[in-house]
Amino acid sequence: MTVSLPLNGGCQCSALRYELSAAPLTLYACHCRNCQKQTGSAFVLSAIVPEAALTFIAGEPGKAEWASDAGNQRYGLFCKDCGSRIANGQTPSSGIFSLRAGTFDDTSWVRPVGHTWLKSAQSWMKFEKDDILCDTQPTDYGPFLERFRAFGIFAQ
Ligand SMILES: [Zn+2]
Ligand SMILES: [Zn+2]
Image 1 (cartoon, rainbow, N blue to C red):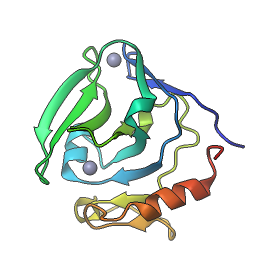
Image 2 (image 1 turned 135 degrees about the vertical axis):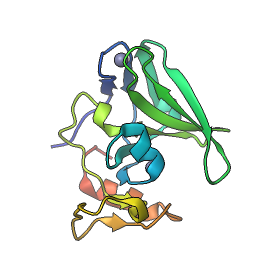
Image 3 (image 1 turned 180 degrees about the horizontal axis):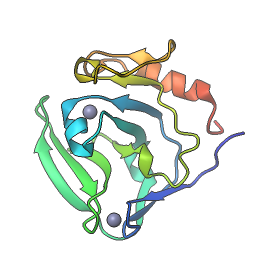
Image 4 (image 1 turned 45 degrees about the horizontal axis):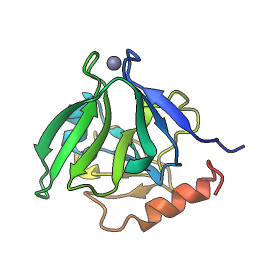
């Protein structure tokens, strides 16, 4: 069974709601320290989505900005009422957002193709044998896109 579009989601308090009109390009878990700090957890489940496909249909997101280690300007969009982080982007735009997959209303289909920044992953993490594993930032996202397509979650 395939999941149909659009996908809807939002923050914890529902003041900020979004609609996603295109299928994610891939979905993976990032274990970098920034992601751990932003969530207070072990990793972020990041759905990579076309920036143009994400529309906020209720509320206006707040914006938190920082300079990444790679030297580009990154920002996060969050609910100003409850503080839930919804997506991260960058300036100038790369055309994609990293959307927090846990914010989808239906997370039954959510499954990461792999894991990035294993260098800072917590020691108790276990991985499946076909997972794509990267010590730091991947240089080639090709395998991430391919494996997500192969899951067949969305109609092509
Ligand atoms: Zn909220
Ligand atoms: Zn990260």
